[in-house]
Image (cartoon, rainbow, N blue to C red):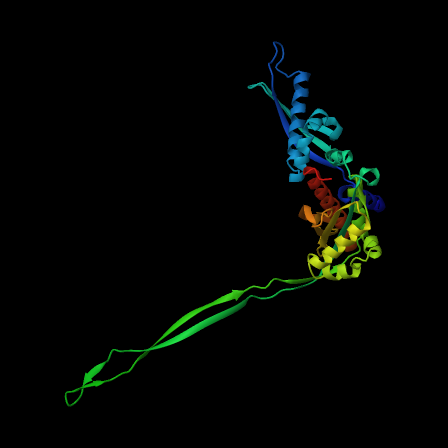
Length: 369
């Protein structure tokens, strides 16, 4: 019995937290006013179906309201198709509750609709299959990318440095206190000095110094390549490019990313030159980082949990001066697993997939191919 419970828990974890979840559940309400009949005040089947359709349409509006700006820009170009073929993007729908108000003759229904994220993304990115670069096999645009996965190794914090300044000013008191002497004359009895202090200063804050350890990027490369390939890009391995065309070594790149959030201008340009030298048809070059946080315990499941933050840019390198044509971040995703390594791997895959998808959506919204 204990083994069965453990097996069931593993199966639930697989469906709840793995990257294979492709449906998003949305609840929405639909209302329809109707005319009651002579012998019945209940709505007929046509009214009920219309209410369900209204609820599904409202659920779709809520679903699209969660699109990123670039996704929504692409969606507007194909909105008519989505509205004409709603069932193509619905995995399942179910009536949660229904009610009939006899005072207003209004029938209401609440439905739960599961939308297929993969089908929606596929349709949004379908425009890529209509273009391409001239001279590239299959009409695909050539792209190479350099995404580095990192984990915080140490953080050095600095206290605020406070500098105080003070100036002292002595002033002789010009007033005289006098008294009568025994002989009847006046004598000075005190000579007072007044001290005036002027204070000021500043507080200097110094940002934390963070160092990173570089993580294996196999899962990241696979996830990003899958997104790009499915969107009609021809992916060229950057490690192969830099090795064959005398670009900066991967060791140089890792050392720099272990200390900084971005490559220096010289190193970035050297990487871009190597990519351009590898093929005259090379169109895009992408650079990004995926930062993993230290794992903690997920209170809901008791498993290890970590988060990964993705930042990335795509450069158009066809002209003499590289231009940023897509940029996003930070995209933060959480991952769960029985240990810290598994949780980090899950979070890396999720962040890489969503981050790369958003970059592609930005290209699509701007109709850049």
